[in-house]
Length: 176
Image 1 (tube, rainbow, N blue to C red):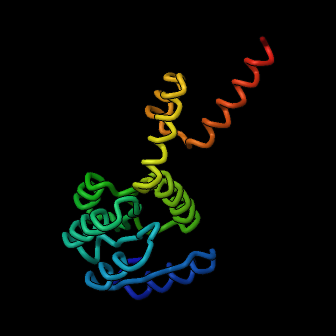
Image 2: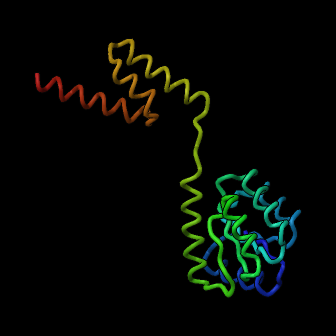
Image 3: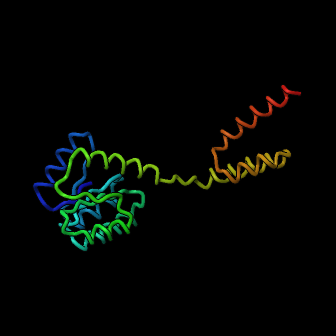
C-alpha cells in the first residue's frame, strides 16, 4: 500500500510496483489509508513522512494496532529525521531517503514481506488446542509421560509427534 500525497511520486511508485506484479493499494489521505488497512490484508505500507508530518506517526500507530504484522517503510526527503527516529521507535521496518533507488526499494519491500510472514502467528483454534491436549493425555495414560510432556511443552504439530513416536517404537521393538 502506498500512502503518498505527491501526485508524481504516487503515480511513479504505483506504476513501477505494479510492473513488478505487486497488488497495489493507494491512499492520499489519512481516512482513506485507515479504511484500506482495516478492510484489506496489507503486507507492506510505503508511507511518506513529508506529506503527513506528525500525522504519519498516528498512521503508523493505527496500522500497527489494526494489523500488527504489517511492515511499514517510511519515505523521507531528509527534512524529517526526527519523524524517522520516532517511526523506528514505533516499529517501522525501514526508513528510505529521497531520491529513491527503485531496485533498493523493491529489495526492502521483499524483505519486509518476509518479515511480515515471519511475524504472523497463527493461533490454533480452541478445537485444535483441545485435540492437542487430548492426544497428550492419551500418551500420559498409556505410560508415555515423556511424550505427553514433549507434546505439551514444544507445541509441534501433534500428528508429526505421533508419527515420530510410532517410528521410534518400531525401532525399539526391532532392537529387542
